[in-house]
Image 1 (cartoon, rainbow, N blue to C red):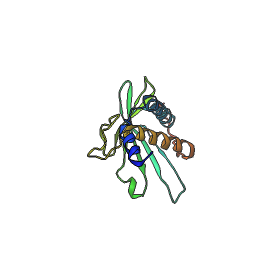
Image 2: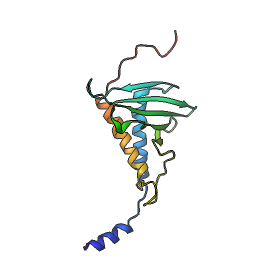
Image 3: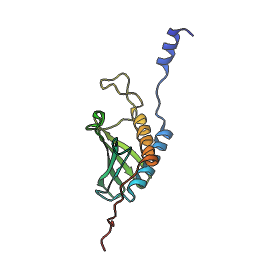
Length: 158
């Protein structure tokens, strides 16, 4: 095929949302978050220490909102690196469906499943799927290599 034919065939390919993949990523994110935060009561938090003493890239998780069937978790990297300054995302977990959905990430307040391309904000057509995949891989890395300082306070009052 000539280059011109490849370009034309590429333009004809339309992005379609992979619902099964998005749901799989959401279920794995929910599973990992529930491993880190347990029952997810309001203001529950955990800091996962990543790296050595001199080069720590911590990940802080905090439950900022709780309703009967959902919770919102703030995920914030804590690092001295300039590229993580001000970065935070909010993840809504649905307890009845055992699934998580990223509802806010840094400058994106409502993530659409599909974006037209090109667009003014330079978002990829599958921006939401890429973000879910990134968070799933990041949390899996935290689960495998991270450590959490022990909190010896009991969560209930005697």
